[in-house]
Amino acid sequence: MKTPLLRIEDLTVIYQTDLETVHAVNNISLTLNKGETLGIVGETGAGKTTTALSIMRLLPDRTGRISAGSVYFEEKNLLDLSEKEMRTIRGENISMIFQDPMTALNPVIPVGKQIAEALILHNNDHLTRDQIEDQVNQSLELVGIPAFRKKDYPHQFSGGMKQRVVIAIALACRPKLIIADEPTTALDVTIQAQVLQMIKELKLSLNTAMIMITHDLGVVAQTCDYVAVMYAGEIIEYGLMEAIFDDPEHHPYTVGLFGAIPSLVSECERLYTIEGLMPDPTQLPEGCKFKPRCPHAMTICDQNPPLIKMSETHEIKCHLFNQKKVSL
Ligand code: SF4
Image (cartoon, rainbow, N blue to C red; front, side, top):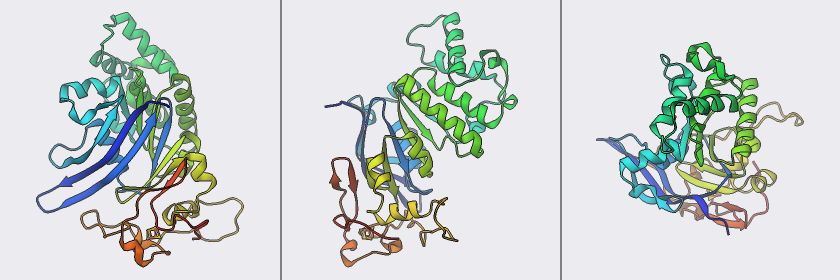
């Protein structure tokens, strides 16, 4: 049996202001093994980024709080670590790629120096200056940027190249886990494809585990081994990518997500949309959180369904778990 690299158990996260409590993540559990990629997919506000920030312990200080659960990385509960211990984990063991490369990079520092800073901050191998220089060159070349460009500033790179620099910084210390939060959303479509292909190749060559946060099922299909579909802070479907993509007709929300993808072969004139909005996270409905939008809602849906195993590789959180197919 594989030992998980990351194991999240019953994680619950709230944002507390003077006026209200936002229930951002509600009792989720996930597992990720070495070298695997898990896609977390869902609409804006589903709790994807909050999950990532909780793993990194980077929730906003004043408002964000993990109110229950555990996050085990190599069997160590990250929530028990001191801030100093956590700083060692960040960058060296787990690093994060953010959505917008322009805000992730410092505009007044050459990109090579920004990669070197990541190495110096976590210089546990006591690398010499020459070794750091070598690693900066290698990191740039890994992401397809010639090493001589290390003296250039971020504004001298295109959007796709900037995101490659961000990925080079994330890879600099060769972390065991990378969390990529919508890494291609800010890029145009052709560049997106190149960056995704590069991420896929790097993951294979470095055997790094990855959490890919996205609202785009196409990105999941291209890069992920496992998928967790999030809705209103809960995981409503979880499994092997092929198990969900080959058979997506079980949870009404996932059915809707797949129905909203344009098809080159179907003759429909309008794309399907899921009616309504995600519930207000300060006032989540009782029972199934998707009930107000679900075309199949029943009386029993007033009770929150558990995640039920449909097979060894596929779980859904819906009272329709025993139906063969759910239609739009
Ligand atoms: Fe719809 Fe009920 Fe399933 Fe929720 S539990 S998705 S309301 S059928």
